[in-house]
Amino acid sequence: MDEGHQRFSDFTEEEVPLEGKKRKIEEILNIEILITGFRIGKSKYKDKDYLTLQYENGKEKYITFTGSEVLIKQTQKYAEKMPFYVTIRKVNNYYTMT
Image 1: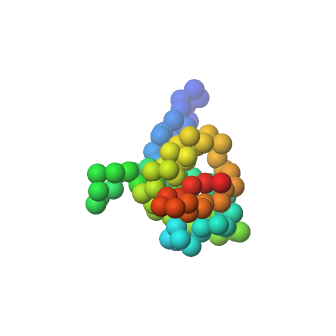
Image 2 (image 1 turned 90 degrees about the horizontal axis):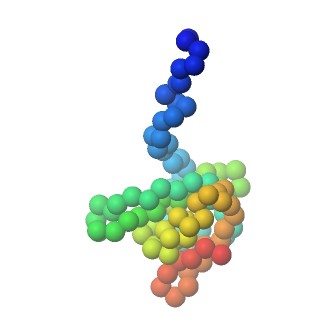
Image 3 (image 1 turned 60 degrees about the vertical axis):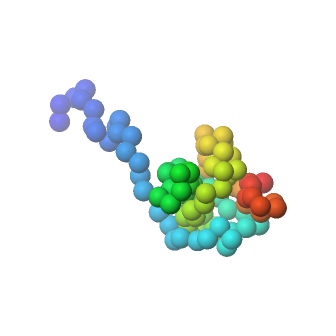
């Protein structure tokens, strides 16, 4: 290879798929998890965003989907601090990280 040339993998910004077993958000309420990644996308069904959370519980990897605006805002705000431990709680009609 010619020295001084970059590899595509050195500068690509392609999104890596989030991996893990799918779990419903209700299954992880009040349990400490380690958030390792996330993605925000447009919902196919509503004109809103949805959040895909990738996390670990023990040695297993999981993903959860939610349209929670509070969780989307919290995830965006603290993205540079990932990975981090969090407990998701349901407070009245919304989910929040604690």
